[in-house]
Length: 400
Image 1: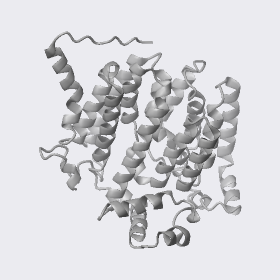
Image 2 (image 1 turned 45 degrees about the vertical axis):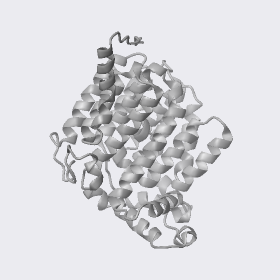
Image 3 (image 1 turned 30 degrees about the vertical axis):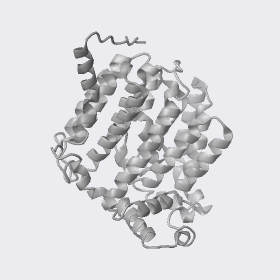
Image 4 (image 1 turned 90 degrees about the vertical axis):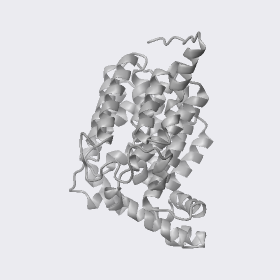
């Protein structure tokens, strides 16, 4: 394990240069989300031993906001053609109806009326904001979900990271955070915030409380919490891994029959998978590669149980890969990875391969930058379609 030495600043010039370097991301935030985000990651990595708790949290927030407005620069072509337009219609219904109880008990919008979490949040938006567009809804949900992640990390995540490495871990979390999905699958992203707290707490009554809150956001939350809690309490052994592999593979072969039985038993959400039973899709090839990397590294260091997360990381990474192809199934069940992939990668390798991790992140940031300036690919929904990558007008991106 690499030991990071304490920095000694002998002169006022050295202290001034150090302070300017560490504050530079904050100075760039009003003028370019992309430049601010990149400098935030660099600062978190290279200043990690010297960053205070308060400044780490500040950079975490700035990084999240920068990342949010990088993705908000798109025109949302795909999202508006799918779930985001539905969410916008729901918001209009809530805003135009003064009787909130009617919305909850009579309309039964999500989950046959049981999923009221997003409805309550939309009601709050309608009170706070005069005009809310579909893109606003996406941005707000990203910010709310990410705020939940920041709170979770500062309360629970830092327990597994030595103080000197905590800022570097934040850099990994931010770099691999799937914020675009938070704005697209809004109910599940909100539910996952409560799932994180449910699997982070140790007292049973708090687990039950967060499980209820998560279920109010998305009905699939309870089985996900049970699975995570089960594996978090297990030490990874060859016997457990083999048993899990057999169960996962058998479940994949029997998936169609299981879904049919669930639908006949009255589980309405099974209808989506019945309708898509002959379809095959992969939401993100990049995320598949990242999860495969996470699985391989945990298998290579199989006997090194560096944290309590090793068992669920290994088993559920394998689950994600085996069930990939079923439209959105792996992504929905493994939604925690969309929040904590960077955290999982860091806790897996920072003790053995800290330098290699930093090199990997630098390479990934180079790829990230090329993608976000539309050099690698020029998709139909390109970045910086709604506003430019840089402007001398402070907070210009808030005007769009």
